Length: 478
Image 1 (cartoon, rainbow, N blue to C red):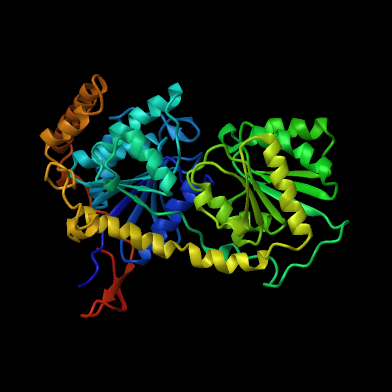
Image 2: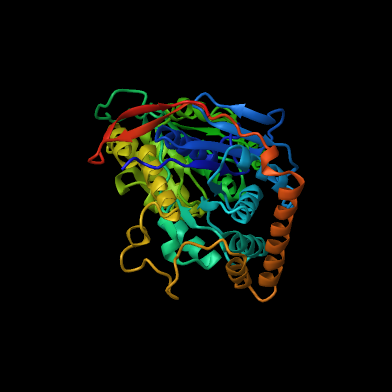
């Protein structure tokens, strides 16, 4: 049977030209889904002078919506003001599935709400971890619970992330799949051909690389405290730090106070295509994050042949095997000690970093991520039976009904009402107003008056009668 193709809208506040893990995930996943015959567009907010519609060279159409950005590249949440624009895009591009990314992306949550009101299927991917005690986390979790009450399926990038998301949003665990990040291994090759590393002479320097956004949650304060102690204990060692953020000034002050200008090099923000050039200059990759759902940077560093030192937080222990990593508790003394152990092992030639690239290549593949994501799309559209998607023993919800959420307003109200004594009533009002706004837009700007966009020519995988991939077929515009 030929594979079904979908028209998919990837929606997030976080996309290129801003560098980051979510941005790279959306781009790579979209690319591989296009290779599998699907139509994918990306909707994000405007970045500086990058507004309107852009076409990337691999066929992805990007809508940069001009909207006020308030914090860490996230737009101001207005709930309803994006609906006219999103409705126009969804209709123009004949979107069937809205796929939101990022817990702190207001645009992704609003797109899911409006997409469900329009009768579209919705998927959400969570890339982060949150706590439960502080006021910011409580507010973020309540918003997440609202956004995911009416979503068809949730994807998490690690099992730790899944546990966190299920608790925060009170989800049925069977409605959440774990699909990890990946990398393009050809873009993260080591500098030298594979050969057993020789012990380093005492005078040969060891370079420690840090590539991260310089924020508190990324452990920049921990890094600032640890660097002078590491350099004091290991004289022939230097640091290269790439990244930017509000904590960059703390690092610069530390360098000046300790007179480390010749041993710590700060590169500032680097583009994703330049990351490999930075990594291959080092021997050890240091990742002092305080919270992390997955940690794509660790995979990229190991693929380039670096020995990884990382804090043992979130989903990081799931990412790399023990022989590639030295773990530390997220506190200064242990981070200094773990980095010291890594330096001694590298200097003694005890770590087979020459084997890391091929091993990472076998572990992580965007082709596999796209295939597993496609199966989620098949499950929520009933392309494959529920019994096959959820498992034969768990195809139906506890009340015997289908696990795929209904579009009926009464069912949507029931799901929102369960979000809390007061929040549930507020969410029901929001859903009702959103539906009334949709009815008004259908009258004020009828679908018949919206031009359908011409599709980018793409290739569709053609399978033979036995279900094997037999070749390619061009699908032109129209």
